[in-house]
Image 1 (tube, one colour):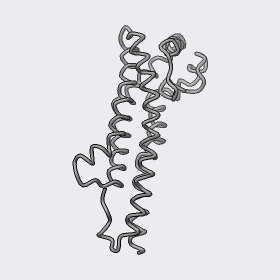
Image 2 (image 1 turned 90 degrees about the vertical axis):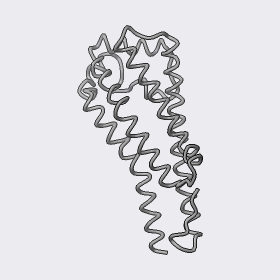
Image 3 (image 1 turned 120 degrees about the vertical axis):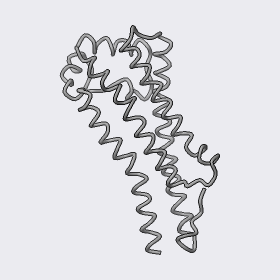
Length: 196
């Protein structure tokens, strides 16, 4: 019984800690590495509180709000920090975070069949796609001659969907952890835990 409790506790800690610790540590590192933290006075002078970006707007945004935001950054001289932040987000943060979230969900869910694995990880794949879509549109707009208002509106919707999927993945992980504890505590021996 003690071994079972120890194993379940370690499994829970690993599954929760991997994406959560990376979320906080990775976000802080991104602010520093991109130059966004040092550019806070620039953001404040541009009328943008702190380092709040469009990606943090869980309810989305219109193309006009995005253009006003990017215009304020350009006028304030903060656009390089924003572009660096988006590049780090797109090429490092999102793949690593979604990979850790997928591993945590898989670790706790332990599906037996490939089809079950795909279904279990689908919310994480969709989260990855929504985040990449949103960031790609922002980066394309800022590094090229801009994109259409339609694409900027799409990125606003992708932002909302990203936040809803992040919530869904968190709820899925918590549900799988609770399920794992219930099933494993009912199993008579440590090796007889019920997989998905």
